[in-house]
Length: 418
Image 1 (cartoon, rainbow, N blue to C red):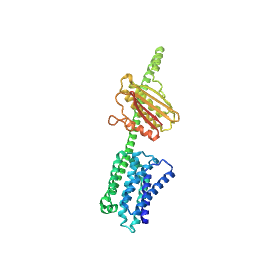
Image 2: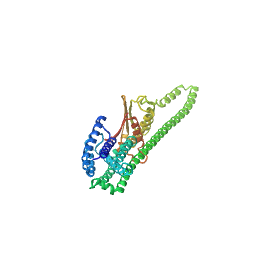
Image 3: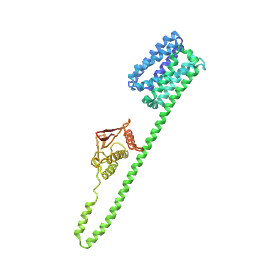
């Protein structure tokens, strides 16, 4: 047993276990994590010394694979991952270790003192991979682990290919010498596969962010368009009132000049009764009140009864305009759904309570099927629909709140907690 064997064993074991712990999310204190890491490294190192003393590198490779899988299963309770994401972590660690072992073996022959160069190369490559995952790839790798149902088969397929060379071999050193091209190609292929996974996840994240931004911009444009329509309607009604007021003044003046005060008084009384009532105030928050007023009037025009009881303060703890936009999207969906029902069933309920946390609930009856997707949002039945729900979900996510859609008993309910 040579010193360079001991050094290579320590570097490999420490790098392998540290990489696994880097990929995972511990739920224990750092001190406990370090103690477990050291215990696994020392236990594997002790087993390696036995095979090094016998010069049996073949059994060493096979035992290392089995020991790592057993140690990984034993360490699983210390981490937050569930069983399948944890298996994905173990397989990824094995794949990286196999690639490092293969590449360092061949590159060390090109350097002085190849036995010590092998250990140095492994230390550098493990250090580089650990740094890369901690600083650059951690968010992307978390996504891959969460989507283990897609990527686990890929990781397992690569691991099986590596394992076949090491487990089926009767002489690992001879296998490394005779299958040089195949092993290097396998290491390159595995690197390209993981690169493709991370690249696709990054592009998907960029596209999702772009879609969310487009949805936000479209929702803002729709809100502005609704406000402009409301303002235009107000201007039109004001013009009618001014026109009628001018004619009323002329009529009253003529009646008074003729001494027909009774008719003038009757005309004034009728005109007062016909004047529009003062707009209703639903809550103290001005932007939200404006949005609710607009859609409540729209609901009244479509014969939808509204039961609106809101306790929303001037400062609800969220962006007022974004909150008003979310309310507009939800009320628009509810009004549209209720409008499609028979006249006797057209109704909408909207309640909001503020106790340091704003809780809002909007419900309306519906007919047919109201399907919720895997993300808990309503499934759009037509092209271009569903953007309002996605805009609301994005608003709630930014606020760190909770959004719940429920269907049952012919009633569709959405509840927001901010």
